[in-house]
Amino acid sequence: MTVNDSKTATTTGDGMLGLGLLAGPANVIMQLARPGVGYGVLESRVHSGRVDLHPIKRARTTFTYLAVSTNGTDAQKAAFRRAVNRAHAQVYSLDSSPVSYHAFDKDLQLWVGACLYKGVVDVHRLFVGELDDDTADQLFVQGRKLGTMLQVPEDMWPADRAAFDRYWQESLDKVHIDDTVREYLYPIAASRVRGVRLPGPMQRWSEEAALLITTGFLPQRFRDEMRLPWDAKRQKRFDRLITVLRTVTAFSPRVVREFPFNLLLRDVDWRIRTGRPLV
Image (cartoon, rainbow, N blue to C red; front, side, top):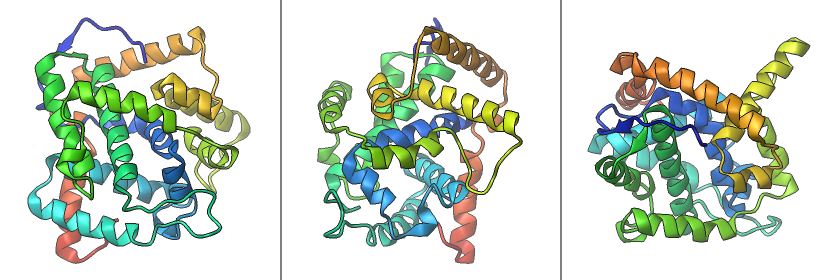
């Protein structure tokens, strides 16, 4: 992710950018690169939340979590926390699992929150501009909510941005994607949807474009773990795409820039009011 831009962001008032959805598959890969998270998702008995089986529903749940944890009301946060905890209670390893895990593991939840926060920062840098200290601090405060809305205690989240950088570098030593998890993640990287197949050339173009975007958003360590090729030519194509999208973002009204996160907060209220499931 090396798109250069002299523009400096000065505010986080625009909320979350809808274009951040493009980074979603890359962020899933980063989260699942910790074996405990990867196998927790791969072996999950909560089939309704599996991204490979229900990609649209899973995307809605993840992006709603981002919206609620950073900008939701106390009532929205409490309701969403209860719903996520009910699902997480069913996610734990068995004797046959290759690694031990539990969805209530604070260390694994901290890693997931850290990946989400890093994704928000990377999206802001690419689509808005490099962060000044004030903006970076504001995003860090927002990012803490991504980890602490569930079981991660406040004092477990890194104390400041420098501490987060140290945590991130140290955590990379625990990253490993084996063949089983890699096979699960590759269709996500290529944005394949189960049961949907385009005519030959269109399918190839779609997957090539998705892989370019997904790999472009990944730090090199995760590209290597996924065995996704990257070179100067691919970087140049990715940079050109981001430049076009950033220009479109700059001239879009706020309601468009924040879609669908603004809509998801209303959807949460509707689901709470009508008794529909949140996750």
